[in-house]
Image 1 (cartoon, one colour):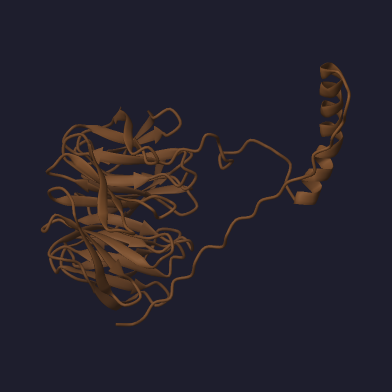
Image 2 (tube, rainbow, N blue to C red):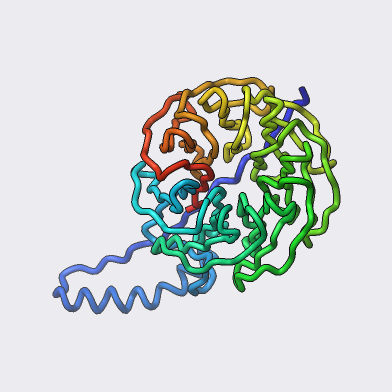
Length: 357
């Protein structure tokens, strides 16, 4: 087992300024003085803090901040929406037929749902939790994954052996790329490359930033779920038929390790600090917690029947797992390896994604 050393994320910063005082004035005088002082001091404070001029953009933080989980219910034509802080359902969105995979934009403003039986992708605005558009793709789309910069959405068309590339702003298919047989899931990395599991080909297809096929990597049997570290250095592939997880080094595009995955691993996700991998074992109805540096299973959490999708909150404190045959989602505290809550979903939940904010 080759050791891995994932890099951590840098901490944030905060700043402030002095508060002026003024005594023995009337309420109206105090209000006028405060208003004038604020107007005079604001440019100085902004300059000292290095804050750019305020403007409204798609990427600007909104308040209150709410991290939401979106669960695709393949048997009920809906997506269930949850507040991850309160751990409760806050809504449901009508989508196409047979929704399976779901992804969210890097800024958290949109969710994308692959509707397998409709042959299209539903765009959902996360602010009001309403569908905003539907884009037709090819047969049996299984997953919809944005690029790391959010400019495009990549759709694995399980029934067409292709990947559809949707322009996220224009909401039009701008490219269709032939890949291996039965493409299942996709992960993207910061340099623009994408990795596609070919469920019928025992391989992963690699696409460059312009969506040209640049390589094929042999993995285990029936690769399905796939994820990557925040840095993009490593990619993890669930081999459902082999009971293993292949680790791909993206610098060489080669398999450098094989991790245990239980009996039939499906979805997987990497912790934000890159130290643990969470794997849904659909045959043993559990979530496996695997230490990435040494490749050992360090936790085993029973969940519902036939777990499928895995997603992690941005702070890494909760892992969410969909249970297809229980019509539930399990909320897990990974630090104590136990289920905190079991929440109802629609019928046959599969894919899950959590907004970054």
